[in-house]
Image 1 (tube, rainbow, N blue to C red):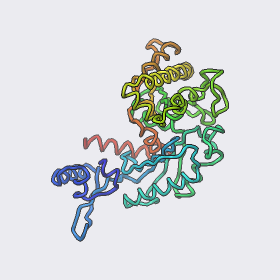
Image 2: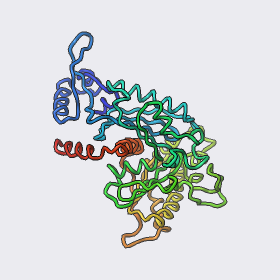
Image 3: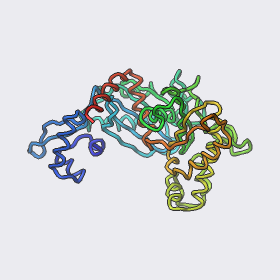
Image 4: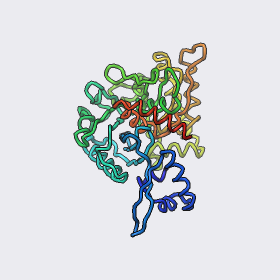
Length: 379
């Protein structure tokens, strides 16, 4: 299935080459998954020879998702049963602009649909995640300065005009929280906060399974909680915001004379290798995040904090000091402070949230529940 998600469609012989499995094993797996409705097969020809072409099933139509983070564009296509049938990602330059990147996203989606023998007309809706708060009333970035090159742009309308399909837009942390609430570490909670820690820091607030946006979409902007009134100036215009102390650029700035420390991934690798300075920087970030998270907990009262984003890959190096700071500063109830856990969906959480946004925005929940029930029966 991973091979099909990457390539779109393959013959059984090509699947054998891609997976390293024997043709007989591939044939048996294809028969089993076709019978359960997971795969579709059709007859085609390769070099004049008859072949069986295999694709992931497209139940009741397709949806697409675009996650524009600060440094990457991730694209996925799924059916309404949330089975991802194609996925891709490309790097983005810092300070990227909406026009160029929306054009690139459109081309990527077109190529991916073509690999599935589909077209834009097969797409029911598209969900988009942005690294800044979005005002649902206008469809625009709600706070100036947080995403230059995208301000004043009704992103959903602009993209919808390009692909002629319905488009829905939200903040990336809200979408990561939505995904974790549907199929990850926040599943089954009455109230949870998903804190995304990477190039920037933000949170998605989930109440009874729904995202809480606030009046203008700025709810959960924990990255702009003031930690040090005399600290560095943030791009939002305030001083000492959490972003300026624990966001990716702030952490890397501490290694500005080290040419091998260019990305958060470099910091994670150094910490994993046991480098004391890298581990200390991540631990200090965890402490700062815990202080801000305590304020969030005192205001929002969630039962669980789910930590996602790239820096969450540091695991307990980040989470242990975060928990300690939370325990010192948050109001404790009968069950103590909220549980702190690492996200279950990794760096795909926001992208899966984009797909969930598309599905739920066009009222396909009943179809999703039906397909989930069918899938459980087959399992």
